[in-house]
Image (cartoon, rainbow, N blue to C red; front, side):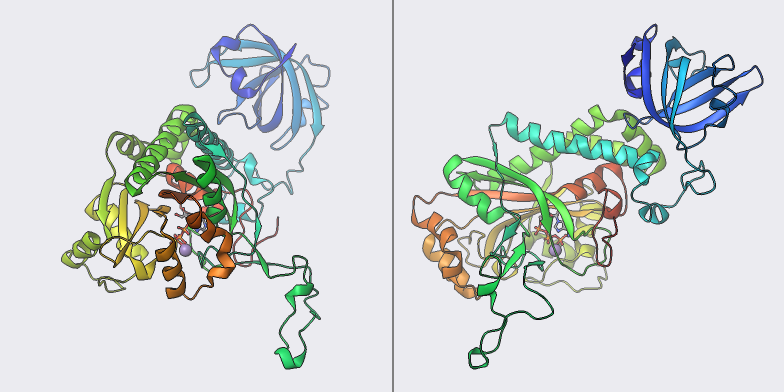
Amino acid sequence: MEKISVAEARQAAAVGREVRIQGWIRTRRDSKGGFSFLELNDGSCQGNVQVIADATLPNYEETIKHLGAGYSVTVEGLVKASPAKEQATEIAATRVELHGTADPETYPLQKKQHSFEFLRTIAHLRPRTNTFGAIARVRNCVSRSIHNFFQEQGFLYVHTPIITSSDCEGAGAMFRVSTLDPEKPPRLPADQGGKIDYKQDFFERPTYLTVSGQLQGETAACALGKIYTFGPTFRAENSNTTRHLAEFWMVEPEMAFFDLNDNMALAEAFLKRIFSDVLKDCAEDMAFFNLRIDKTVIETLQKIIAADFVRCTYTEAVDILLASGKKFEFPVSWGCDLQAEHERYLTEEKFNAPTILYDYPRTLKPFYMRVNDDGRTVRAMDILVPKVGEIIGGSQREERLDVLEQRMQEQGLDPAHYAWYVDLRRYGTVPHAGFGLGLERVVQFVTGMTNIRDVIPFPRTPGNAEF
Ligand code: ATP
Ligand code: MN
């Protein structure tokens, strides 16, 4: 007797094996012929395995005939070829053991369809549904693909801190980390302004949850060559959108001796690799998303894998938007920040393909992005995809000490506070580049799920941190 997963038990190759499978009942049907059909799922795949429990089993009347949705069981039996065409196999049970019941009066996941809004209120149970099981498997596949892609190319996986005192220059509002008593924090004397005395806080300075591991990632790249980070990232933005979380997972590669073109080529190959791995390794789940969530996801991914991404400078994009004849809510002019409506027009209507926008006005972008020879633009790039919008943001970094210091001043930053970062330009500086990819935005894009709250197990958004 071998313990196998439902995914394995569903394969024709399993026929003839005596197996043990364990999971949760989706449905039970009783046949007039004196036996019951149990649909069993264990999260290993989208499909269930059908178990045939004969009335001759010793606990048939007292237990098996009462099994219902959400009950947990161990089943032992023989895998047989199934006469039905929906499935290759079925299991003729020799033993069914009940672990836990689920009162049908209160168990929320009965057979009927639930809205995603409702399922968010039962985040602890929603992984048991088809959709959330599929999302969990795709999310796992994307994570594996990320590691495989970088590991195969000799990138080093490095770990940057979660608690930080640098703010990656306003990538987003930050969550404060403090052990001071918020009721009565220690204060500087009144003659020194009476402000909170952070010298008495745990780290003896103000600290925050990280909004990006980039600055620390650069220190690693400027010693080790090619690195990536992959970890939780926090933004206290009060933006209630379908694309923003307060806690999300970001992948940030950083490469010494890479310019912006190298960076773009890497990002494009990286996204294509993720998309093809998902199509290949999660075929059953992708078929489900294509059928139930968005009828275009598979075709869209296939098309993207086969074609080149569009590359377009910010200046060209502004010209295209101005010439479009469209009435945008936010009017466009050179120097303005592109809004979601502009990005959507470019990726969905104009190009209908992933689009790399680059060379943005220096006034729109952080101090660490390399200034172009024109003096007006920096070597920034954003990758936009239809429906989701920005999926990657990156740049070639400013490696010239004098320009970097000037940019910091320009943006009102104190170089002393970033001394360690500036040192990278003082000692053995090199051209380098990197980008950040939001894991949840990728999962959203490949699955077609419209709300980012549904592609992370426990979403953190303004007002929500229940589970
Ligand atoms: P946006 O303009 O969409 O708010 P951003 O410009 O603030 O994004 P970056 O600081 O460039 O984003 O972060 C890099 C990547 O991290 C983004 O391209 C996106 O994929 C992801 N990301 C950023 N903010 C969030 C968020 N609040 N929730 C989920 N993913 C995010
Ligand atoms: Mn943002």
